[in-house]
Length: 161
Image 1 (cartoon, one colour):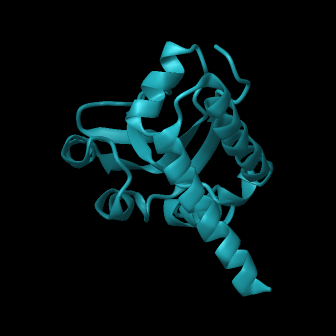
Image 2 (cartoon, helix red, strand yellow):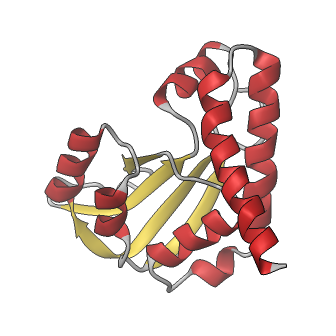
């Protein structure tokens, strides 16, 4: 049973990544968008479970729901972004190309804002963002993995802008 569940999660992650690369129409984007939002709504119900935990635990939970973080951006949503310190990030589940597609067609892109309890070094975060073009890879994941989550907010999960 556990093996079957793991296979389903792996296939879901693979489908999310592959499908996102082949979307050509608004209808295809809507199907992709709805699948991401449905899974994020499930994660959102357990938001309290992530508070006080390392970011790596949140990433594992997203993986468990078949959600793969594609991009990480530095956030100033709470006006706490300074040149020396980083308090928040937002994560997305779409490629840059798919973000452009969504913008062009006036579709929202689901975003998760993560606010950390402690300050992260801004220059290192900025360097990783530039080096990896905001992509969420092993180095980026490692940088944020031990950061303790203070709050998590889910946004842009209603469809059209």
